[in-house]
Length: 232
Image (cartoon, rainbow, N blue to C red; front, side, top):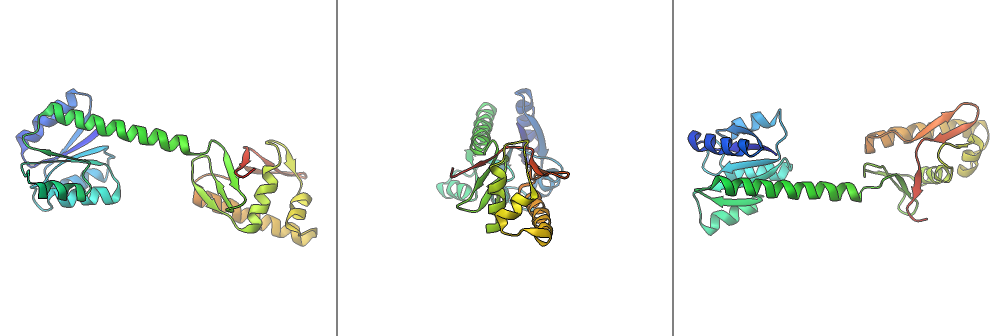
């Protein structure tokens, strides 16, 4: 786990950092909010351990920022043990609130727990994403294998539905696609090319992937990946 310790007590921060490092975590240290934000500009952290009483910005403000931007999980550590402070910490987005003095073993266990939770969430997210391209002709949308959604127009839906019925690696002619769109002839050919160009750009922009479609010279178009129908 990549951990950032935000604590202005240098001795305490150093001892906690040493313990966590020995237990397999990659640890960086910050004495205040400014130093934290500077380090976050160049690194991705899994967990931030944040003291409340800090110069410049207190731990509540830091926790609120981290939760809002969804940058990392947060553990608040503080001598302030009132129920008001604890509730405020959780309202600001803290995952765990620990009252000082904090035992290094307990802190390490809390960090490991957050790491396991994040790993489980990542696995669940990957499992829920489609393994292939998926078209929903009712909702007029296309799901990419990375789980991202591309909203389609009615004509784009007709086009993608026709392509999805073509086996991967096989070709479909321009004439067949023009017939699906109800636009035969040379003028329809130009409009088909324009639509495919715009559709490729849309998929690239919305899904961060290339549409799995190539032009087969003098034949038509061919899929390079399977496209399933969601409501088939």
